[in-house]
Amino acid sequence: MRIITRSEVERLLPVAVCVDIMRQAMLVTSRRDVTLPIRQFMPIPDAPGKLAIMPGSLGDPACFGIKLVCKYDRPHGDPLGTHVGMVMLFDSAKGEPLAMIEGSSLTAIRTSAASALATDILARKNATRLAIIGNGEQAMRHVHAMMAVRPIDNVTVWGRDAGRSASFAEAVEAATGIPAQSCGSSAKAVSDADIICTTTAAKSPVLFGKDLKAGQHVNLVGAAIPTAAEIDDEAVAKGRFYVDYEEAAMAAAGELLGAIERGVVTERHIVGEIGNVIAGSAAGRANDDQITIYKSLGLASQDLAAAHAVWHMAEAEDRGMSIDLLG
Image (tube, rainbow, N blue to C red; front, side):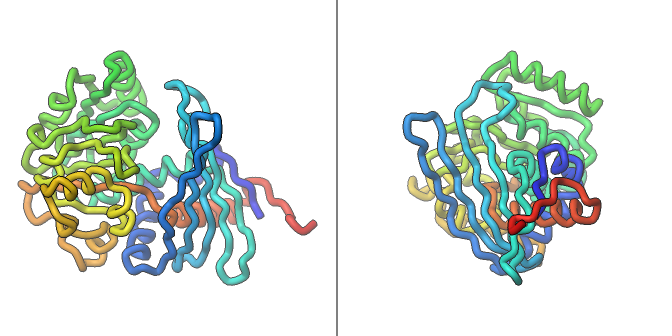
């Protein structure tokens, strides 16, 4: 078994490479060649955190495993971040443990890569202007991910803390060379955008349907529980709504569930899973005027596909620490 650290995950799994890994993972997911129990959360007594438990299996490549993630409230900029954990990867044929892989970086990379995949499939081909709502780790990850699938030439940013947004815009320019501006409202940030990524910890909407324009593509990344939403009902209704996994969406996609509960849309508002669009069994964008929305919840199949790729590359290069559990 190999133990693979954060630095090796970052080196072995650049986001552009991970986009193609997510493409295959979503095809396998939509074929249902997976086992994906709904994730469980266990609160930690007398502590500001919880343990997320995500088991699953993948048919191609054949593997299974579990991701364990500690989600704690920490100050902005804390080196641990909000997610600390690991992915345990096993071979399906023998039940043999293959790797224990640092989970925070793997999750961050595969999340932004899945958004990039959805953007590549759903956004207009001539999309170049990116709006980021939020200014944490996933915000910067998504800037680089969008650059992997579209020739981004302008970035606008909005977050609730104006100082952090301004600093984030400066960091984007320094890291990418792309002009980036901090805006005073989410409406201003998205006013001229082709692609919008919401990467917040918001419990209530930070982006509104009245501010969306024809032809935009939106990636909803932050909210992952049924009581939280990054966009309002009007935005849900205006967009062609796509998900990573329908069963998970109907359990935890707060934006969609809230709109259904209030009678704004029905379950049929989901056009399809991203894997169905790739396979051709669900329609993607039909014209340049449609608004498309991708709701990202994150799946164990994505973690396993990324973990297997990292393990395979580490094996080929003899990287990480190899240990004999039976020795």
